[in-house]
Each structure stands twice: as structure tokens, then as C-alpha cells.
Length: 170
Image 1 (cartoon, rainbow, N blue to C red):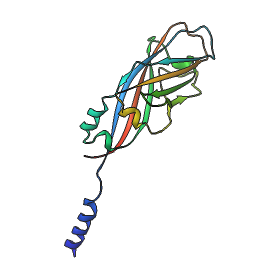
Image 2: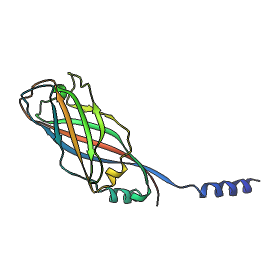
Image 3: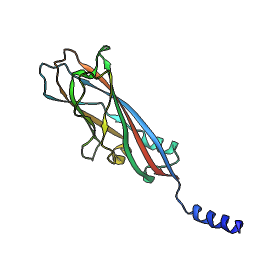
């Protein structure tokens, strides 16, 4: 009886697709220029972010055709410069992603930045499907900020993104 049960289970589970879940992270930066006014939206573009996604997929025993879903699981912003800077100057911030041949999509935001915000903040993620953006050779981030204080120095912000990938194994 145990042998029959074992073979039945082996047949059932051998037909199942094997799945993998892993993370891909990227770091980029943007500079918010010093301003003379407040409550005005300012758009800043990051340099192109090269994805190297094909090698990331290969390192995780899959390929881009087997990817089921990629979503942003975390976005953390850190004031890099000035050294004593913090995010208290912001009223709101939104991050958009774009890649060649794809439309721009809002992926993260904080519409009410605390005036006591420190040097690092986490943004709320949309959870949207982003696999086509990450499968592309490169993407760009657009940072839209609204300040509630006049800043006299440019602020360089490091943008850390962590994407969760769900895919079938080769």
C-alpha cells in the first residue's frame, strides 16, 4: 500500500512546474536642485539603469521567457549629499519608471513626507507588474518632488530599488 501511495505522489509531483523566487536590486541617484520657491513640482531624471537582467535570470536558473511576474518590493531613498541633509524639505515625492517602447508608470511615492524625516525614507510601492521594464536592457527613473522648504544646496539622493521576481525554472 505504501509503495502504491509513493508512486501516485511521485507521478502527481513530477508533473508540477518548478518555480523560483529571487530578488534583483539596483541603485541609482538623482539630484534635486536648490530652489527659490516652495510647493512647485520639480522633475529629475536618473541616469540610465542597465538591468543585466538576462545574467540575473541565468544565475537563478531561468530566462526572460519564463518570468511570470516582477514587482517592486522595496524602494529606499537616502540623502547622499549634503552630509547633514535630511528629507524634511520635501512635501511629497513620486518615482516613475520608463523603458524604451513602454509607457511611463508610477511605481513608488510618499505624498506626505514628515517634516521630521531623517536621512532615509522608504516609499510606498504600487505593486504593479514591471517585468517588461526589468527585462529591457535599461530603464530610467523620473523623480517628481514637491518641496515645502527652500533649499539652498543641491540634494543628491541615492535610490535603492529591490524587485521581486517570480519565474519558472529551466
